[in-house]
Structures are given as C-alpha cells and as structure tokens.
Length: 337
Image 1 (spheres, rainbow, N blue to C red):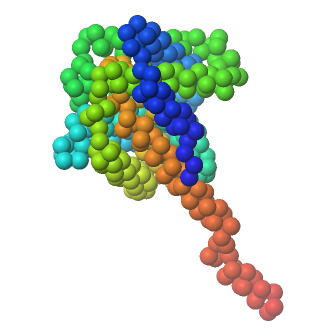
Image 2 (spheres, one colour; image 1 turned 180 degrees about the vertical axis):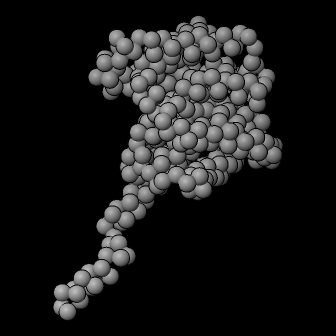
Image 3 (cartoon, rainbow, N blue to C red; image 1 turned 90 degrees about the vertical axis):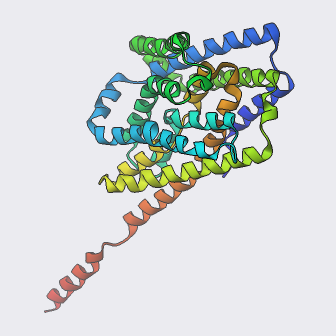
C-alpha cells in the first residue's frame, strides 16, 4: 500500500525542525502561532459537527457506547499493560507517548472512508467518529491527568485553563456560530481541510523544534523505535480482532460491525497532535512520535481489511442461495408431471 502523502509532509516538517529548529524569539513566535492554530482547528471542528446529525445518531446508542468503550476504556487498558515493557523494550518517554496514544479519540474521515469502502453502516461511522471527537475534548485531558500525572507536563489549574481556552471554548464557539457559517464550511471543505492540515504541520514543527533544542532525540535509538513499532502493531491487531468479534458477540449486524471495527480501532492524529502540544508542552515531540507511527500503520492495515470486507460483501450478493436450486428442480418436476 502507498504511504499517505500527508505522512510525507509530516516527516518533511520533522526534518525541517531538525535542520532549522525555532530558537529564541522565533520559538516564541512559532509557539504563539501554534496556539492560535490549535484554537482555529477546534473552532472548525465545532463548526462542522451538525447538532441535528449528532442527535439523530443517538438512536443507535448501543453502537456508539461500544465505540466509546473501545476508544476510552479498552485502548487505555492496553496502554497501561504496556508499562511492563519498560525499560526492556520501551524507554519511559516513549511509553508515555504510547500511553497518550491510547487516550486520543477516534478518527472521523478515515473511519467513514473505510466503512464506506467495506460496505458498512456509514451514518453510524459518521456519528461514532463525531461523538468520539467530541467526548475526547474532555475525556483525553482528564485521562491524561489521571494516568500520566506529572510526566505529562503536569496537570494543574493552569493547564486545565489552557485546555478549556484552546480546545473547548473554540469548539463551543464553532457550534454556536454554525447557524451562520455552517453553509460556508460545507461549501469550502477542501480549502478548510488545507487549513486543518497546515495547522497540524505548524504544531508538529513547534513541538519537534523544542525537542531538538533540548536534545531529547538522543534518548531514542533505532532499536527502541523498532520495539515501539512492534508494540503498536500488537495493540492494533488486538483492537481490530476485539472490535470485529466483540461486535459479533454483542449481536450487531455485519454493517454495524464494520463501523465498530473501523471507528473503534483508530486514533486521530488531527485531534491528538494539538492536545499533545497543550498537555506536554516542550516534551510534546516524543509524545507525538508513537501517534504518528500508529496513524500510518492503521491506514495501511485498515485499507487492506476494508478491501477484503468489500470483496466478501460482493461475494455474498452474487452467490446463489442454498435453497434456490432445490426450488427450481421441484418446480420443473411439477410441470413435467
């Protein structure tokens, strides 16, 4: 499978920060611009989420509760279990980034795309991803406060105020103004998508510049990165299996199980990066590295699974039903008699 072009842009931004990190007054400017970009990002999230669609989606509450449980309960439990890998496989900073990865909300766009490709319940995927992003604005910082503690850059009244001002307030403002700007946002999704991605690139540049200035990359060796990739592959495999067969155990239909699998096994790079910049501050570079690796991995694996599910659905449609041939034979015999 080809690499996501946006991942190449992210890697290019990391390389730019490695060669030309922002220092001194330039770092202050980049930090201020990054803060404004995060606020703009969550303002656009709020402007995009249709309140009516969200309320309509509540009808399928069992599916949404299942996805939220996978995202904010099962994933964090796997992250906590990985604590036993320190320091043999993972360093403590890499583990903190891995644990933060498990606290991030699910994706919206890719969950919808893969669910559609696999012929699943697309409306359910839309609502599940939107609910996860909405809940994550509150749940991710609170989980980070309880599970990461001081290692996550500290969680004080000041950091809580930053989260409210940079994430929640812009989101609520977008929701309140959606009545007037919702049409504009819907008509200009492509342009605003560029704003989204540009904002995230700025956050990445600021975080990795701070990491270069502080010399934190000397803490990561190729062997440690390889161990991180293996651990993330195991976590992704566990979640993909659990969401698929767990959905079956809960007696969801095939279309719903597809939506659960793709919405419940993913983590959002777009939501996670801005949150990391707020929660981790100068330590955000190592914190977002596991999330960037997991993002590319989930896209590759889920693309393969989605194509397989689509082939299975096509085969079920074209395959003759077991009783069809038998009924034809009986009918023919009756006419002959």
